[in-house]
Image: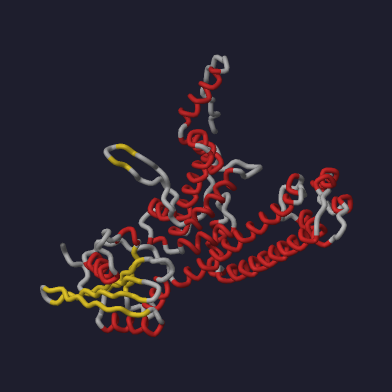
Length: 419
């Protein structure tokens, strides 16, 4: 095989140590240099200086948990090293032939012959945005868990508030929960009067029945604790959103264009920018990006038989945000869009869940083109497929009428001549 890189190195990264194997071509021979460095900052800086001093062209490492990130951050600082991150599945060792030294040597050899495919690592600025956006997702999940614990606590004491109110986080629900947490004697009639919302006023009689209970001091203590935790998480989320908005200021124009897509809101646009970046040259095509995000069918074929089309794991943050956007686009009230028509078109054959993933794929492909070309979103309309396939639509509607017992005769509409 042809040698692609005359000076390269492979790193096997762990929590406490980094195993190095450098391969340097000298004439017809390949010199191999092996070493082990601790993962303290001073030692990693020495590793970086050694690589620069020996004019190493390219350095590859596996993405092992979070341990590769500090190594990457230190090695990329002088901008003289070409770093490559590898998927561990692509360089997996054979059972019984795995040590730190062997792993580093295998990575270096595969890199030297160009047999590895680099993973996507965004620039430092985008990585920091990614940390902030993911932190907000985790806080949102924690907040949802606390809300579920409040619902469970109310059910334990037979307080059927969720049977009357749809959202336990609404202003009316919060006022009632505060009353339950502070009042020593519960008066359902007084608590029901806290329902001042127009939609909830008609439910006051049901609220009185739902709030009739016998709480204890233990119940009030737990409810106060959960409400305080909910407020704390809500405050941290607001603070984090302000920080994200500040860091996203250079991308306001792009955020505005993305938000014109049906179902895509500001948080969804922030997630897309933070996860896939703004440089689409990293992805050869929209299909490649969809595969990286886990929003396309997988391939599992053997002996001419297709076994499964299950999607891969991909980037769960992008997948989560886009599937939520797909559900929102499919349920837009008041107007039908291209995505609404596409959702119902797919759901009739494959089901609603697969249709949501298909719409998410469409949105991602559209985002790819909009970021790459700087273009605007153009709505195709709910009748897009009727305009593309008019004959197919005509036959389908004719067959439906005939099944209902009608005899259908179609005459083309005469288009008035323009003078």
